[in-house]
Length: 263
Ligand code: ARG
Image (tube, rainbow, N blue to C red; front, side, top):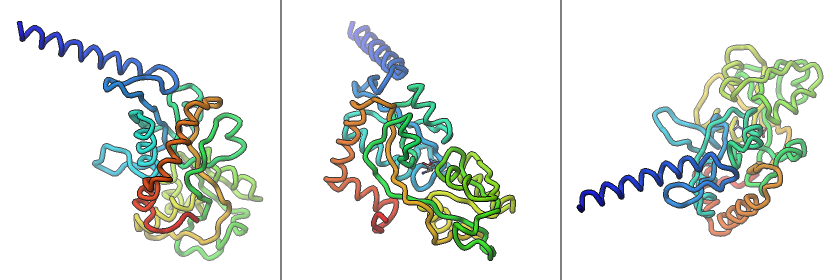
């Protein structure tokens, strides 16, 4: 008799789990997992160290954004489930409700505000240029006129470089593709976000390329939710504020950027 009860209990648990997973397909962060917690479905283009990346042999996505959204989810009482989606597919995935939020080093700008709502800013960034080490002619953004430039597709770098007179802009899938193209001599420069360029050159210790000090823009990163999803946005902003107040944000910041202050 005891055995039967046990079997029944296991069966019930399996059923609950199955129902829990099925619930993940539901809309706006309302799905509950087997633990009873809600699941926050997160989209990120996992190609942007130190914000979102995957190291060889490591199954978990890592980086500043990944730690921050896990901390935010925890604060909200949600399980966090991260999906890797190409950068140009992220806003469509949000609109199709395949994910609830995007955290992906995404710059808050007016164009995107037409289609998504952004959280309070969580990181101050900007664009810099990477060139080959022996480059003599490109010293700043004004020298990019008439040059070949690689950028990640759909990014602010793409937008900013397209207006440079005479420049030929190649939009590639990832920043890594851009750097490869630069090293192979297919382009003269890469324009990309400052902290990502710095990490690539200094932490990954790439040789044959250098980053220039000139900065084109000042940009703020925000977490995006579907337009009009104010309920979720409020929860995210509240959690972000709490993490800033209780020192957790600073800890995550120091883990990825050392003691350097936001600049
Ligand atoms: N900050 C830039 C933008 O919003 C680039 C972001 C790229 N992010 C990524 N995970 N690849 O357009």
